Length: 394
Ligand code: PLP
Image 1 (cartoon, rainbow, N blue to C red):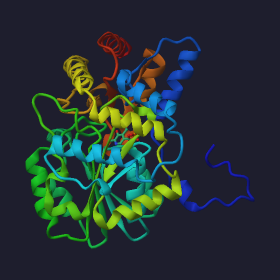
Image 2: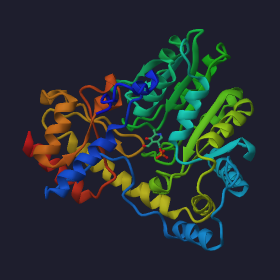
Image 3: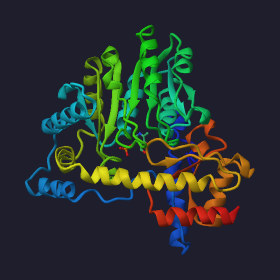
Image 4: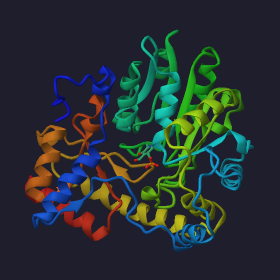
């Protein structure tokens, strides 16, 4: 369908380089199968299955009733940017200037804008592979050359600082990292991050985008290491985080990034050109999320942890599957090579024959072949039933 352009129209070549996020396609297929009457268990989509906490919803409603329905500053209402800075100080022990915070409609616009700022033909941008598919998609769209950082199961899907540093060239503009990671659940240990930051001293021309959207979802006593905690790279660091995963707010569309002094005006100008501002009521809801009680976040993470233990242990009992410990986020990323199926075959077969939606590892890049992503943002009952069906189908 993408190539059915009438002959007279001349879309720019760049639009044909734009990729997609297969999770949305699988979701659409799963929903249409469900509409036909099939019983589908969805372990495909990456969003919490919890409701947004009530006090956050109420704050959004109250904002509308109070008349907050006009434009706001493009970078976000000052109170929200101050609350983000206070939250980062509390969680990561770092001082952040609220004027360096740019509020966005979700986490995605930050990655798009960072890549638009740095990407052009001749430039190189590094990104995790398997990784969130939008990185590679927007790098290609920008005309820059995507340079994958291969993530290996044997290393717990953490990146190796040495391997990243070895790929830097004079053309490298930006390095994207993501820990805890989608789709693997991998968490990069502090030693690797220390080594990466130390090595970057020799490459002052390289900027870093650290996608920390899963910063509150780590298990087994792990604590999050934020790139903000390294003052030596603050002048070239873009740190992305947001509300979607932490507060179960994916549909509200709210995220933010901390930008370095030299880039923050470019980012704000992109907001003005693109969407003007995030809708006002959502920003007030986000403010309530940061300043209100945090027990709902803790309860949600505890629930994910329980499901994580069950899914990893049960995946390891399926013949042909091997699942590494999932250290963060809410994804299991089993190796399925032993089944003899490719990632795509497994995804299609489990959906159509077992009624279980999962995502092929190859949807996250070529290094995802032989793997499947299962989101455990679903009930224990459904997770158990889904794995039982997969077993039966094999
Ligand atoms: N970064 C990563 C690694 C993600 O997995 C996601 C969503 O799945 C996002 C960013 C985007 O989040 P948002 O829905 O806030 O745009």
